[in-house]
Structures are given as structure tokens and as C-alpha cells.
Image (cartoon, rainbow, N blue to C red):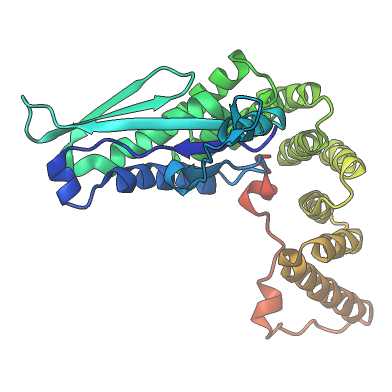
Amino acid sequence: MKKPVYSTEPFEVPENFAKQGYSKQALANQLMDQINFIAEKAKTTIEMPQVIGIWNQIQPQVEIPATGVSLSSLYQYIRKAIGRESIRVSGELILPTEQKDKIKLIVRTVGKKTERYEDDCKNINKILLQAAENIYLHIQPYILASYLYKIDKSEKKERCLAIIDYVLHEEPQHDDSLAYNLWGIILFKQRNYSDANKKFQKAIEEAVGEKHNLATAYHNWGISLSLQKKYEDAISKYKKAIQINDSYAEAYYNWGLTLTQQGKSQEAQILYLKASEIDPKYTDVYNSSFRIAKKKEKDQVVDKMGFRRPEDKNDEIKNTRVRPRDPLFANLG
């Protein structure tokens, strides 16, 4: 899917709001900020939208000789042909005469239903965020689902699940694999591992031609199996993920973690090292596992010689364990 472009036009605002600093461009800019805020919070590998103000674009109206076509029209045609058609957003802010402390925001997205929002005057940022969420719902719903997953601290994730259901039942279907993957993550965090495994399997079935989505689904299925202590099955899924993407640092890390849970520390070290070579954030994990392995070797020698093992004064080594990250570093895709 090509990276979408949101073109936001200046919003119409009441004169008294404009005097307070909410100019036409300022209000549109605030909506653009909320669109970008959702994209940043979502932290997904889907290409994020480009958000621009119409007033920042050069729209040449010069007509091409003997064609009757303006340069502006040709520019829009080329963008559409390469999959970068601009999604135009406009709107207006209204002060209802019957309710002095209320504001209404009307947002129009070309090709979509006009949406209306109402709240107290002091909550203008809140209704702008609601408007941005609704724009994503109709244009890039998986980004909205990922965003809701990140901000919702409850276990049920009801709003996120509602958007996942929307993704799976609306066209187009290019995000279905990611939606099933996210559903699986929610389920295994609820310890419903059986249903989580089924969702990861569906994610794999839907990931036709999408190598990244395929590797992600295998990886997360491996996490679910590992949490069920089905270690050999989990390792087989991590291997599948790595066969598809041999630079998948999280898969190497979680494979190593599974081996650690099986007591295979030396084999795990090799995988932690591989993960750290791909992504430096795993360097500490590798170093910790190396120190632990060295200490175990020393203890084994002391035990074989029949000496009493001394108390370990190195608290850093004594208390260090290789720990999972965000349960075993699940990847939203």
C-alpha cells in the first residue's frame, strides 16, 4: 500500500475564536498534529501518512498550451497514477447560538461521510483528536487499531477489538493479516492461548505475498506457544520467521529465551549474540547471559573439586536473569 497523503485545507472559524489565536490555518494545523500523534503512538511498520497543509503546497494554475489542462490538474493526476492521491480534509468550527459554552466541529473528508463533533469550548483538542481518529477509521483503520491498543491500559481492549472487527469486514483486505496478528496478541495477553494460536494461523493465511506480515505472525505464534511451555513447537515457529526474514532480531532473541527456559544456556548465547549483532539493544542481554554462563562454569568446577561454594559477592551477576520484553517482545507488525 502506498503512503497516503492528507491535504488539510484551512478551517473556517468564528471571528472571536480567530482573535484568540485559532485562525483558519491554526485549527487545521492542530488537526494535522492529532493525525501525526496517532501515527506516532501506533508504532506500526505500515507506512505512516504524510500530512500537509494546502497553504503549504504550490498549486500552479498555469494551463499547458493546446491541452486545456492546468499544471495543478496534471500534478494531481500523476500523484493518483503512482498511488499517492491526496486525501483532502476540510471543515469548520461553529459556536451554537443556543449554547454559549459549546463548540461544534464539522470535518469533511473527500469521498467520506461528513462528521460532526460537539463538546465544551475548553475541550477543542479532545474533539480534534476524535476527528483524527475518525479519519483513520475510514482511511487507515489498522493504524487506529494499533494506536488504541497502545493507549488502552485495560486487558479487554474493547475499542481496539471493535476496530479490528471493522478492518476484517471492510474493503480493502490488505491489512487483514495485521489485524488477526493484533487480535492474537490481545488474546495471549489475556492468557487465552488456544484462540490466540488460531488468530496467528489466520494471520499467516492472510499474509499472501507479505513477507513481513508472515514473519511477524510466525514469530508471535512462537511467543504464544512458549508461554504455554510448548518449547519445541515455539522454536519451530521462530525458525519459520527467521527463514522468511533472517534479520529478525526479536525472533533470534525469543528463540534464545526459549532455549534458556529449557536450560540450554550455551545454545541460547549464540542466539542472543546474533540478535545483538542485528540490533544493539540486545547487547546487554547477551552480556548478561555470558556472565551467567561463566559463573555456572566456575561453580561446576568448584563442585567437582568437592569444595564448599563461597557466597557470591557480585550482586549484579547473582541477581541477573535474562528477562522477556513486553511479553517476549510481541510485534504488532
